[in-house]
Image (cartoon, rainbow, N blue to C red; front, side, top):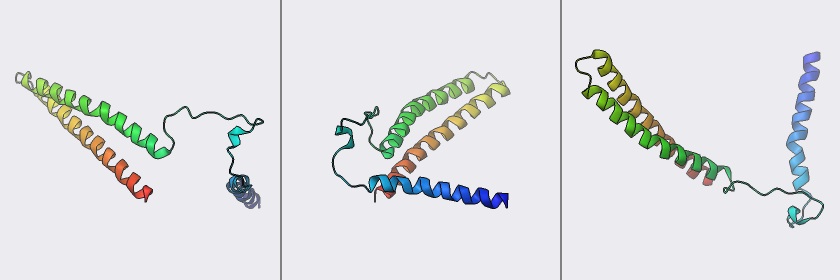
Length: 124
């Protein structure tokens, strides 16, 4: 019986939270609420207006950082292989560095592609 009451209260509370925004926006009016003197409004500190722009900016930033970093790691792995001097351990480390750098580059490239694809699908 206690579980039933808990779930009933949870469902009612969730329903109220889902309905309240519609009641507030359903009051009508086309004027900007921030123009009223009795309201305190904050300006958007971001230069983006929606979530899609923020996700695209984050993906671009990560790609800007990850692509040169992967190139540097590939170069470092090549240097390790060239200077291994017969050491199997350094040869393995160099190969592993190159492998993970290529995998990281592929993931970053695929992520940018997927962000663009999802943005296109959601825009329609």
